Length: 103
Image 1 (cartoon, rainbow, N blue to C red):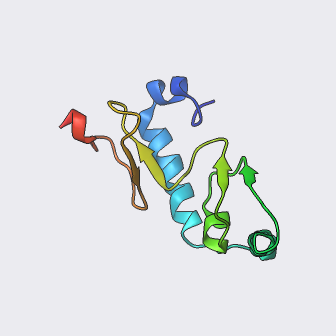
Image 2: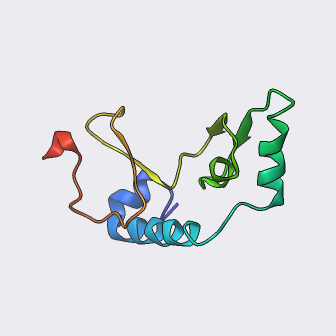
Image 3: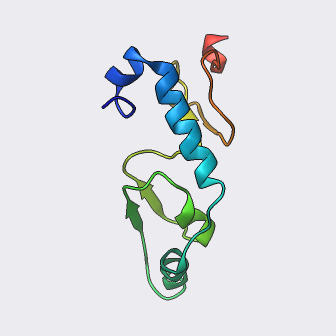
């Protein structure tokens, strides 16, 4: 709850940002495993849709095309001013980063 909730963010936004910045850095250092790759290969013969609780992009990197992320995506950020304003994000997110509507 300290790092994965709005309440945690409202109490200590720096802690939440540090937690997710570390996860993002870790994600950029790993690769899809055989399971990710084999699921992607199934798409050549079957209609496959991946539904995952994981926040990583390993299914995408393995080549899967139809993926639903139930808990969001670690490498994307969304504006608080416009929920359709979603950006790819691979660097640290820090207090003071503002979306287009907040500038």
